[in-house]
Image (cartoon, rainbow, N blue to C red; front, side):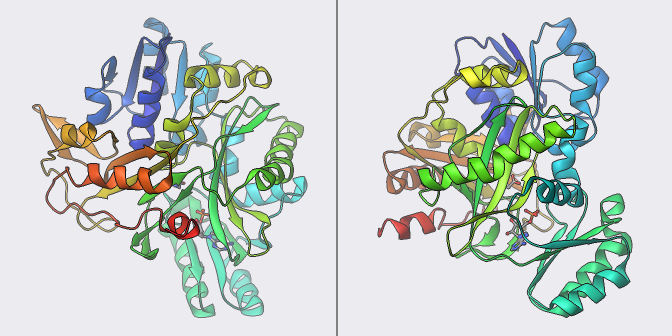
Amino acid sequence: MKVLVVGNGGREHALAWKLLQSPQVQEVACVPGNGGTATLPRCRNLALSVNDFEGISRFALVNNFSLVVIGPEAPLADGITDYLQEQGIKVFGPTKAGAQIEASKAWAKALMQEAGIPTAASAVFTEAAGAIAYVQAQGAPIVVKADGLAAGKGVTVAQTVAEAIAAIEAVFGGQFGAAGSRVVIEEFMQGQEVSVLAVTDGMTIKPLVPAQDHKQIGEGDTGANTGGMGAYAPTPIVNEALMARIQQEVLEPAIATLKARGIDYRGVLYAGLMITPNGDPKVVEFNCRFGDPETQVVLPLLETPLEQVMLACAQRTLVDLPLEWKPEAAACVVLAAEGYPGSHTKGQTITGIDAAEAKGAVVFHAGTRLKGGTLMTDGGRVLGVTGTGETFEVAIANAYAAVDCIQFEGAYCRRDIGHRVLRQNNV
Ligand code: AMP
Ligand code: GLY
């Protein structure tokens, strides 16, 4: 079969790479892809934009691509799945109605309340005065979120009331466009964050191995928030008993409530969870897609062919498909451009990827492009280097051994990816 992957990040490179490991997948095409998907055997990039639903549909129909996989949230929220399904194309990814679970935090909160899913107490406001009065009454720390999609920049964890008020004013000041027409104010939750990406066909929902990512730019989890500077899986924080609770208290009620609302949700439901100090899982947010860079550590551990999982979701046969996993650990270290997550350089020549892969790691491209046969940086997060091994120590050491083979001017990575898990194992 032939599969089309929509998106251009490290997550999409990992999806294409994993799909191509299956003998059933002859070819993958990426829209628009990156320098990694351009050089992956049996893979090619298409000069189409992720918003060109008609072009994507025409290409899939004319060339007999039997499945389209949507990576990022924006086209899902814009209804790409609805459009392609109307043309008779099988899609992995929820409809526009389902994508609201990520595209509107207020909508997601209402769904959680209706489903009885544990999450932070919250209130929604459509104007600043009410929101400010609320934070003054609640006190700090408190969390202020723009309602809509804000490319990961719409959340402020405010340590003081003044900071919370400034965040409210920024949201209503138009900084986030339509995403800032409402604000969600949330109780601050303490604990460790974990990412549980689950696959669903709208009836059955099955978790992938639990992962953790490092959102902050600086070592020791300090400094500005980023798209994710690294990740690892399976995190031992989520043991079998906790995963059973997450299944029962979060994943199943979410799907049942979506279904009760008439939403046929198929694809990934990603639960961003806080594991509170007393061990309870609480939802921080839901996403309607795979995580990035979590995908780069989860998929290398998956034994079951990925296209089978995706087809089972699209065709509603997931109940019959057991998910098998390699008994290993994986860690991904992100190499970022100088200045990221602020304004950063582009167009630096990248060398050493072959040497890095010769060390046994997989190098996923996030922000790269090929220019006349030369690989150049083309984004803030440039590469994600995934190492695997029998233990986290080995996986992390393998990832860094490969990272050390790669050069581009201004390359930055954190040197402490996985520190929580190493500490936990008393290494
Ligand atoms: P979100 O975009 O909702 O995932 O929020 C971005 C980040 O802000 C999360 O990954 C958390 O680190 C943090 N955050 C969001 N909501 C809360 C909360 N209620 N309590 C503590 N931290 C939060
Ligand atoms: N790694 C966080 C995300 O994908 O949203």
